[in-house]
Length: 286
Image 1 (cartoon, rainbow, N blue to C red):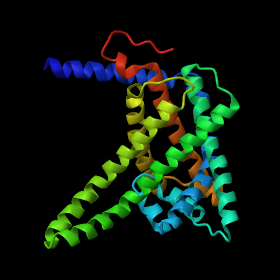
Image 2 (cartoon, rainbow, N blue to C red):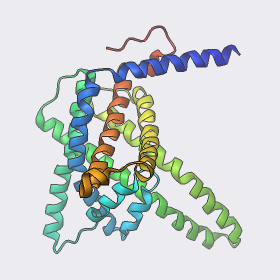
Image 3 (cartoon, one colour):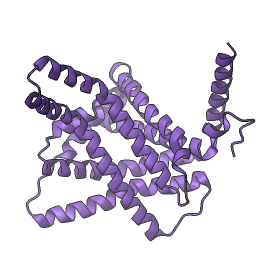
Image 4 (cartoon, rainbow, N blue to C red):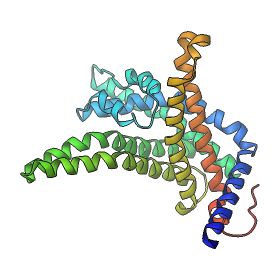
């Protein structure tokens, strides 16, 4: 009984501290700025991922299936056309990749600026920040490609198992287990991705373990908020009544702001040290 009471006290203290973090001045400014730059960078990033997928022979349907459990359907339809590009020459490919990387890195660059503001760190030089943003962009795209290819790996694993085992029921069981683990695996990759970005973004040394709670909060928050928001859009919203053809764009903007707010909130939770202080005495959030 005492154990449950202790857990309840800690959860209450944690919830109270999270609420205090949402009242910080940075939470009123940074999410909107970050959402704007993420929106500008996501189209080149999706187009870049689509081009890389075409090199490996993957179709656009793989992209849609990979994010079906994470991203609202309206957003998937909005981005599907950006993931299919045709290049007439190797020079066009080269120009496209360079320009796409530079444009897409604006999102990670804004994340660096936001993290420095939250941690109260002086920004590094423009060149250093741009190089770091490009490195973070490469890591982000590599991990996103793996997340996209996770659903396609199920069929590949099933084919390998059929060549090894003669029992089709065993193969079907292995495939079913993989399908069950698909969403948790994708969530883990998103968590690892966010944790890595949280560690690299500030222009100072941040211990990886100090970003675990914020990354976990953001990964779960992204998943749940996208599900709830998608359900709300399908069943309750009536944006078409007021905005007409702009309703899809409005949905996209609101969803990006929601993701950016959760991303900044997770970063602020890491900076406040809530997870390490919740077991101690009074938590101080500045």
